[in-house]
Length: 368
Image 1 (cartoon, rainbow, N blue to C red):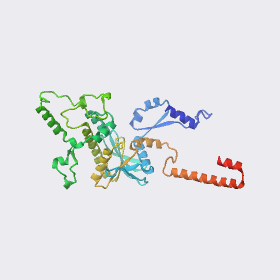
Image 2 (cartoon, helix red, strand yellow):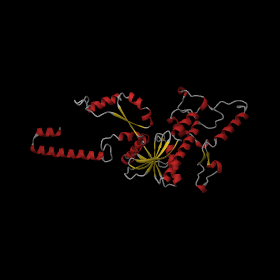
Image 3 (spheres, rainbow, N blue to C red):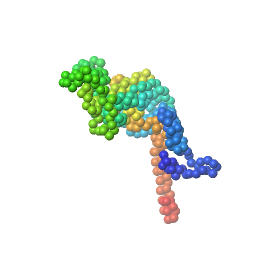
């Protein structure tokens, strides 16, 4: 921040205007989200007097998203296993739409026009839920580690699938054999079976008190954590890995969000559903699950959209509230290029006229 202040003074000039005021525009920090209010005083103290402007979180989310989906090419895309990133061209005709902002919790926002929005629902089961439960159940300590675990796991070892119940698809109601019938539905039976087998082999005794799962009672030291080996110490009563648990819980949270998003879109008659927030992070399983949920429940009538910079909607929205006129708007770059071409053309004509007149000094001046 000190470097930014010095650069700001160098570009805009320092000192006063001679009338007791400042001759340069104020350097300020735009802040949004809960932390902008909770830690406002600490932020101001840490930044040494720099003006901190707090902006409404939901309004900034909408401004940021509107900018991305109407102005930025190769930003918005749909996702499927067959076509992982199919980009959608920017469009001015985007309203109304539903924004599903997934952070610690989830907010569902109906957007009817520029800065015209309404929070129509939410759920407490979001990224914070996944992070909290996996920190108890696995050895992972960061959200990225948890997503990496999920990408390596097999949820069928933990979840009860339609095929586990019927032995095949349930085609009459449109359920594949791989559809999850019950999240974590196999855990109790498998854990009980593993315990019984261990007892029969003398590994466990019914009158011997078993310690809690190592994932809960035994802390994993930072220096002992091996990125290549995410599992906790072997527990014979756990016939599944931390990666399997991570994938199962990721699917459970994502499927729940996807279904609620579909129901909200039905209630408010919205066909475009945008997913944003720090929960997604470009993670393939997360996007595929959300996209599949929307397509499944809507029978293909609705579409889930994702963004390359989904975690920056609020920050960009806060910045745009202080932007110079026409900054970065679609067409502004083309207009600037056209203006530069016109200036170059005018200068070329002037140089040609000077050369015809044979005045070398004027030519040198025109070229400079």
